[in-house]
Length: 113
Length: 114
Image 1 (cartoon, helix red, strand yellow):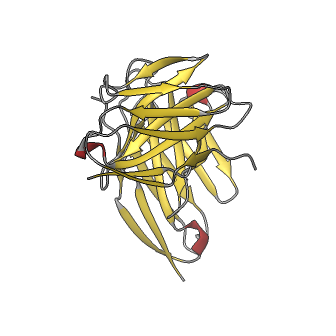
Image 2 (cartoon, chains in turn blue, orange; image 1 turned 120 degrees about the vertical axis):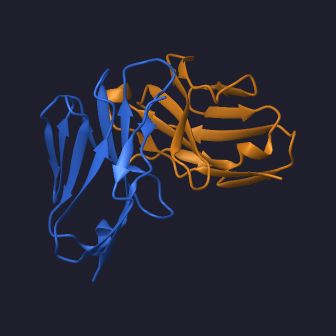
């Protein structure tokens, strides 16, 4: 059974502050790591798919890094805005078998004005 | 922006009944998936589908579950005889590039088995 852990579980951040959170995954049999943003009453929206150790990806104020050797990825949000409030999910893919994407439980981010 | 659409948004069914959840993936996507989230738990993989056949399935996807792409646009998940523990939000997703491409998720069907 693959274990994907996200921390913290929830986070309150002042508008304008920067923040980051972590996704931990197995360091063996790595194939891909996905990040999704999931707003209440909407469907999860793809942010990044990362495949190479040392990858860094950026989309506006949001960026992500990947360390496959130690099994973690960080998601950073610079200058948080109220519209960043959402649950951020990471999901790990090991390259076949019966697992599909294995999701973490998510980090629930609340931006306080 | 292309969307994955799912119907119905909410279904209530009696235990033991069959249900069919419907999805219309994005038209040029080749990879299709079903995931589910039981309330308070993680999103769980059920099945992936490519080239008109199942490519991966989890332990959850037992003989009670089946998928079909009957007409080139719809992608359905059938649960033959529902159990109380099948109550969950079921998400369909499609992808252009398999597991190295981001998924586009539908908005989900909330299935309640009573």
